[in-house]
Length: 216
Ligand code: ADP
Ligand code: AMP
Image 1: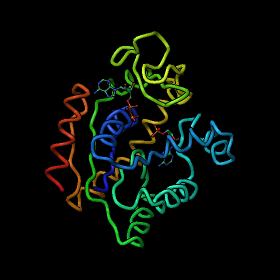
Image 2 (image 1 turned 135 degrees about the vertical axis):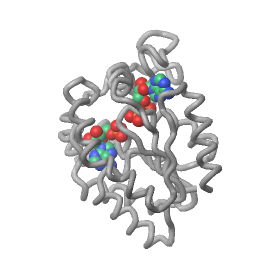
Image 3 (image 1 turned 60 degrees about the horizontal axis):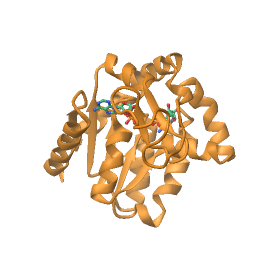
């Protein structure tokens, strides 16, 4: 299975991918996570990427395509992977097609999680992430047992710089203009399924599983 999870920022891609990766034994490839990790480790790539991320802008296509290309060439991405947050532009989608073609491979399913704008804002403003293991929580919809502390590893939670209101607005505008066109791009190939992301975590997960069964 070579799956792409799409949807606006805050739709629940990361939350759903945490479960999908475990249950289907997939290699998770999240460009946002790769950039944040590189920043945490003080790598030049991460420092460069964070300049865009903090403002709610997209990281340069060439930089992003290059890190994905390197990641896809690793052994663990050969058989099954789940892409989350990439591609985000038509240029990236075309680059991904080229990369996969060279590997004699292709995407098998694209799941598009749909959520309305009010819910997106609520979800992003209340999102909290573990500094240590990157697990994602929400102040109201998925609170931790102890305030501010990760249930899984005991790490401290923080609010992402790009989850501040100004940055969130910017990200939503960019999503509409640059990423939304990819829905048609993949729908035309017959491999896209929409899933209603306005439901509970579990209901969204079940719908994704059904959609995957339908396509693969
Ligand atoms: P994305 O990866 O698409 O940006 P996340 O998975 O990080 O989105 O989810 C954004 C926020 O919304 C998180 O705080 C998460 O806990 C919360 N969330 C995700 N899915 C749901 C859902 N179905 N119902 C309520 N809150 C959700
Ligand atoms: P995410 O974790 O998917 O919400 O991504 C966080 C931020 O990382 C985005 O708002 C962008 O600034 C950057 N980013 C992640 N993936 C990409 C991508 N495919 N192309 C460009 N920028 C990206």
